[in-house]
Length: 302
Ligand SMILES: NC(=O)c1ccc[n+]([C@@H]2O[C@H](COP(=O)([O-])OP(=O)(O)OC[C@H]3O[C@@H](n4cnc5c(N)ncnc54)[C@H](O)[C@@H]3O)[C@@H](O)[C@H]2O)c1
Image 1 (cartoon, rainbow, N blue to C red):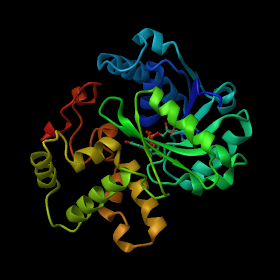
Image 2: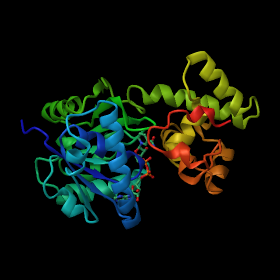
Image 3: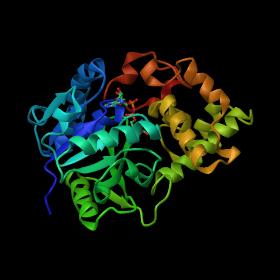
Image 4: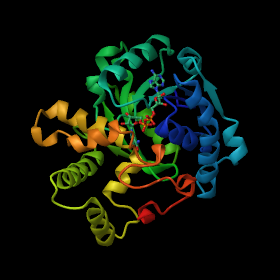
């Protein structure tokens, strides 16, 4: 079994940056690739800050400088995949786009490389038709924290994923200090996202149907759970465009009208109200202090 020593992130947006920083902090060689030159430029600073935050939290084995030296940035997919063992795709939650990128990854990656998706909802079995190496595909799904990622990761194979692929993926997940949540039977939403998704759907419906103010729902959640952020704050944090795509993905799978994301959410996305990344979502994120790594009071915006 060839251990994973080098990992490539395809997509250097919110999740690509966080996963790259975590892997580098734990001593893995990391390649990062994005179609946008502007995103790649920004990713350097963000990964440096995320690595620092990981190290400040006592995460990892490297010094911040040592970890950052492990990260290489590429505009071309073929360069990013030339010497790697595991690729994690972290591009938008659109099935056709993921299939297209998986086909390209399959074409250029060396034979032994595992192809993983960080998709929030799409089982890799819906993507695997795009590749030849169906024994080496897997869902490796991370959860974002304000800084970094949580120490748990969903793992789910496709219809032909080999035991060796699952073992290699699991070992890598453990190697970055995360608990693998192994999905026993294929399901949309994996182990924990399925639960979070039920919360999200009910919150969105309650708000869109005019049953309750989203701030009251968040306040209730925070008082009840003793958490510093409620579901609407969390959705802002995820990015409302990303949330909308994820909800659409569930809806397209089930065709159940109850799963259709509310029009009011789509209208917010169309107005560019995406959460911290655009300065406004359900909450006002215009204070740049809120966006600094380590800022831990997103629920205190109102
Ligand atoms: N946002 C979250 O909290 C969260 C949490 C867990 C999983 N996810 C999942 O992770 C994935 C990415 O989400 P995100 O929030 O990081 O999105 P994002 O919009 O922040 O980043 C996506 C990036 O992909 C890049 N991209 C688009 N097409 C590409 C291509 N062909 N090749 C390389 N790069 C390309 C874009 O330029 C962008 O930088 C989605 O599947 C999402 O569902 C998101």
